[in-house]
Image 1 (cartoon, helix red, strand yellow):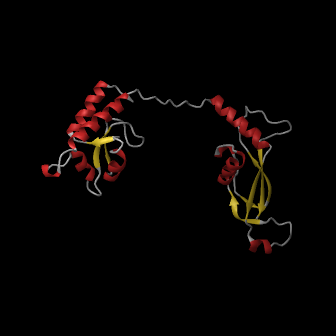
Image 2 (cartoon, rainbow, N blue to C red):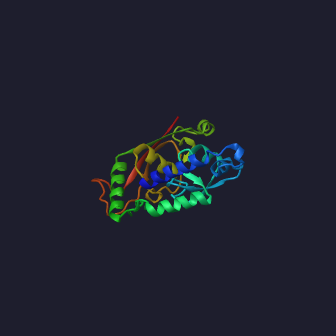
Image 3 (tube, one colour):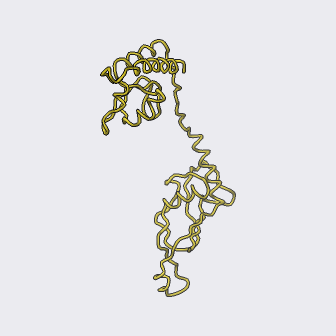
Length: 219
């Protein structure tokens, strides 16, 4: 922070000194010249501090003239890429070493963590009932030969639908491989969809396999 503040103060003094030129002097301050830019041409600037998604302090990047003029320049977050300012930035960075950036380490998920997730998901889903409300095929509904015939739905319920609704309704994340659904569900009713979890996860008492109760109702 001391480096950034000192650099900005030095830049303010340079800018204040050189912008005192009168128009009759026939010269334009390089900072003001660079700010004007060309409407659709980007400017090369040197960042005085690290900016997310743009670059680190000391780097030369290209930005839109308007962004530099309205945002970066007033806050002295960047200066034009000309020798005077480049030299100042280099000298300041020699005197004040930038703070070390924190290294973000990605902690890999262990097999034990994965098994705990599976066990939590399995215990929650075995007692749950996943509900769908869908439209029915009216033409086929009227053409049924008997009341016992299944009522066909307009849009079949697929494995992707089940995965999405499990996340939405129960806040549980499971993988496609955990759901065994050879073909989509195409009718109203209640279904037992087999679930596949590691054999090391103990089944609840009275259960011989993991299943998910799915109920499909008409709108």
